[in-house]
Image (tube, rainbow, N blue to C red; front, side):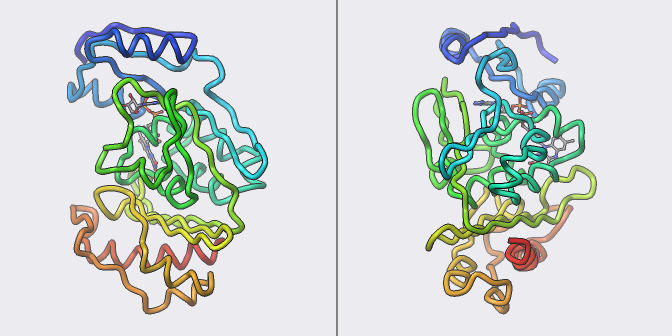
Length: 263
Ligand SMILES: Cc1cc2nc3c(=O)[nH]c(=O)nc-3n(C[C@H](O)[C@H](O)[C@H](O)COP(=O)(O)OP(=O)(O)OC[C@H]3O[C@@H](n4cnc5c(N)ncnc54)[C@H](O)[C@@H]3O)c2cc1C
């Protein structure tokens, strides 16, 4: 690991000021992605700005028909939250299926969303539920937030403070996990809220995406049967040592049907 300067600010304002005044600073949340990258010398930030001492960035609250989850909330807290289990059980299930207990007790929703790993679970929930990502500067709809592989709409010096999830009428998540890491080989999050039907796919492509053909099929009747015979093209999907694009396209259909059945 290359040397760096460590900071532990107590407020978002101080963290933002440190980001602006440092040469090449990085935010540290759970550290589950950032620290291994630094240990492998693939990242060499000049400064680490640790959010673990910042007041008010963690916690889960229901306000009206929306669930507010602070950026520093750990996956285990979301998985075990009575509020989340009652309002959006599919979100609690998704959080409970991330990695292993160690990962779930350190990893944060803010870190996962900011990192936008193509195989991560939370991006599917954000897109699949039509969430809003709140930063120190603005509110970004999930539809505009995830822009490419490990790439988001976040600008320099911008910090995620919370994620807002509207409560759906129905929602479900199914993933085919990589047996080693538990990251999604393919994960599909489905939801229905009023006339809004969403199907978000993670793990299959370079970035989480909405499967519009599946959304159209479910718009008439939100049932697994509606997806029979509906296929997803493998043209833009990933092919690697774990699975071919063709296999991933097949898994999208299978996971989508399971997610709808779970919803
Ligand atoms: C063995 C292992 C298995 C895993 N399995 C899964 C899995 O099955 N599914 C899954 O979805 N994930 C999985 N993960 C990822 C893990 O869940 C974490 O969510 C992920 O590492 C990022 O969260 P973090 O809090 O650790 O962020 P960090 O590593 O601290 O930060 C990640 C990036 O986000 C930036 N960042 C962090 N917080 C903010 C913020 N509030 N605002 C702006 N930028 C920010 C950092 O600067 C950094 O660039 C796994 C990780 C490991 C190590």
